[in-house]
Image 1 (tube, rainbow, N blue to C red):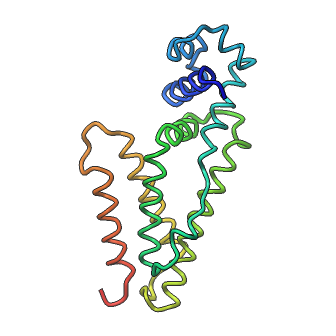
Image 2 (image 1 turned 90 degrees about the horizontal axis):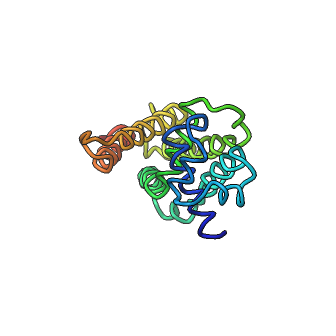
Image 3 (image 1 turned 90 degrees about the vertical axis):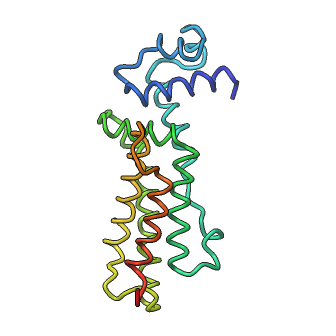
Length: 195
């Protein structure tokens, strides 16, 4: 991909995330990318194609391959590792995540096909947490009161809350990394037997 096309895509992604599809003009994208509108049309047929390409490129980093990273860890260690991996992924793909969240919040139309992948990855991640929780309960490492599905959903909701709080910025305390460390401590206290 040419550097000009990448610059246009990057600028478009940033503007679509900040203002949505309807409130982002090709003139704004051209200004942000420091190119002419004609150059945008050289690379993209229209605004819709630019938007869909920006969305598709935002989805590219979304994959889950954690088997090797979790091997050798007990179930609590695996959950703590997944918490760290989630945070690391969001930190490394902040514009992509912000873009996708902005689309959902703005209820952009005709995105079901493109957002299906994100929803599926979220479901897989939540099910992975639930499987680990269930295994920990069956091994009697975790308390009998652990509800694998509900606790996995609660972990995901907490991670998403920390994510949103991190996006708000503005000096909100404590910082997301500190909240994640506290979450891991709280998970140990909640899950482990005899604590």
